[in-house]
Length: 302
Image (tube, rainbow, N blue to C red):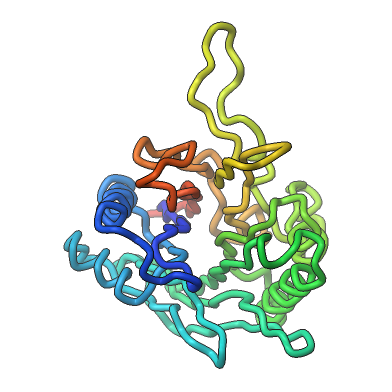
């Protein structure tokens, strides 16, 4: 039994400019959603920089009757979330949702939208945290706010584990505007690259996107290739134009402490010909590739 989980920062409707997408750009986004849902048959697709209208357009224009919508584009005080999800009705049942906000002085920060599901076939809980953390244009790499985001997301994970007798099924995904090795994720959230260490200390999270920091394809003589070096492209980067900001992370339940297992072979950054690897006048809002992972459980018949 396989279940796929994906994230894509669409770039369509950031909170700073929710109406920026053109008709052509919306058509490209629809093609990507179509591929993810009809071709890859993703079970849970979380989306960033969307509005409620965007989510409804995806389902209505693509006739995705087998999917339900989670609208996380909520406004809490002065904060406006810009994430949501579509998920297969036959695969997951929505139980509860919560918006997580961190406060520091007079500032409020969007930590995540928590989505609590039941895996229909096995009647088991699955807790998903969808995050879109601030851009480094507004929140510096070394800002204390980024540390706080990691700490508060860690607290939310610990809260769930505290009410379960064994490591809970927890998945964290989104655009963190930080890479796997940055302090907010590696030191504060405790999302590690070492599976053996995560098994030894099951409070740790495992982040398979440590393995996706470099070139996707090896260098070959006389062949420049069409590779990518991360999930997010910045044309003005000095030391690199690529960042692995989009990630999916897992509790230790998925690496040997539970009945569901991460099938890491399928964890990848999905490169689409429609999405440019360098900016262009009509597609420059699309600077993120989707990311995907798969979990599986052996079904014993009889």
